[in-house]
Length: 637
Ligand code: WTA
Image 1 (cartoon, rainbow, N blue to C red):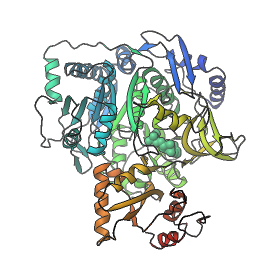
Image 2: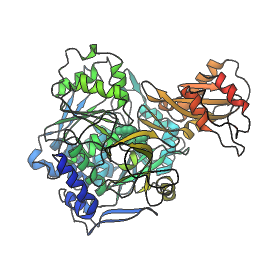
Image 3: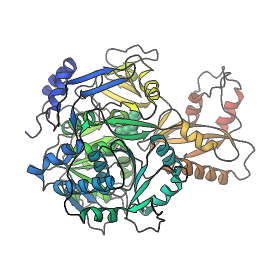
Image 4: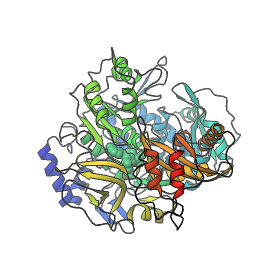
């Protein structure tokens, strides 16, 4: 068997789980033996959730890219590492072998050094879904620089906030990116962001769309020119920086319940070990399998299950530049057919939107290569689960429902494909090493089965968040202070009579729109920046396609003369401040908001109204002005 730590039966899962909980050091030490280290660790784990201070594989030395690349060269150098399917069907796809990827990464690592990037520096990546994005990530990791990928849909303002928070002096971007019928203007957005970031020293630009852009002398350089300077010298150095197990690998910003996104920090060794462990077990990966994760690398799913875990396992990762429904609703199935995809990992939102096109787009598409299907990012409704099972998997492909978060680095709760039982809309059982706990509002553990509560984890796993960049206290208060001595996920959860877990959604002020996390406070801040807006309150509501939609209640200084126009102006402001993903689906102008006497907005009431549950608002007697509720009910959209 290629992976000694691959679990292949339900009984073995149960034994492994027991061992992992009873002897975590021995268990994870054993898994870590399967990786390449410059120097092994002295101790597996030290931790204190109250600070939090969590260290894995203490004093171990390694470079994650030697695990992703170098160690496969001898046996599997000619195996495809990345298969890239372009946005346009007319353009040729690219296959990049392990040898080629290794060379590209080493070459670009030298480019980074030539441009002054050093170990520990933060490098922001704002790129489309081209192979040069994983190449740039790995090149950063090769020299010990910390990458921070920003999703291509974020606005200049969002980029600027993140650059300032990370004090990133280097940027890698493209002239533009193709996404469906659109060309996304990456470089010009970066230029707008940099107006408020004078500390940025270098911008490396990858040519993709031939969009006219401005190149600033001394600051902006072309990717290809810089590569040529390195290759002109002939010998490319393959040296990799020796990293400590706990050196940061990357920062990834994510939304929380406050207005400002947090820079989640992951470190080298723990992230490597746990992500690879989960990949091989959940997807039952076999060398040669083509793994297609449809996420964007700008999110954690892409980091973990397109780039790092797949490459560490010597796997073949398919990345797609465009949209699943472009140029038509059959594109995903074309890709599966064309590249003989074995594992398809996507979001419930994508499944629901493809479902809406009916079965015609599937006609003539050979999906027989598929072995395993997966979902991630949001709860999957049973209807979508069954459609996926019947029409895509033809009832012969196990479906894994993987629950996890940016902060967890990789999946914590999921069935293992074909090995442990699946149950529609359930993430089912914890991975080895993961100890879920349900707690009530007071923090008391809820034991037994057939119970619901807030989901916490009581013991660390190797890829747990270490800190929030530049503000450790924020990490503590957000994740480790709500419940004593536990990591709090922010999710609600039900444990059924058999002990299977079903994630029911966020219990904090975080929305999950099409599998993307957005904080209500962030959206409110953006709306409040619009001229004439006095105050706003944003809540989520069930949305057929997106899972959750965004409903905004807005108080204006004066009644808008043209409500429709003002609504679209507000949408424009939100797009400018955050990006199109945060645009509210509905905007209702209101005269006031339901507040308690202490001035707190009663979101529970606003949520119910947005959901259409207007006859069951609960107790409104504590409101400062109960009359306002009727008015809001009447104006409901
Ligand atoms: C939600 C994405 C139900 C959850 C990997 C979590 C899920 C948030 C699932 C994290 C799932 C993720 N079932 N809900 N299988 N997977 N979620 O950080 O609310 O973008 O807290 O990470 O997505 O979103 P994030």
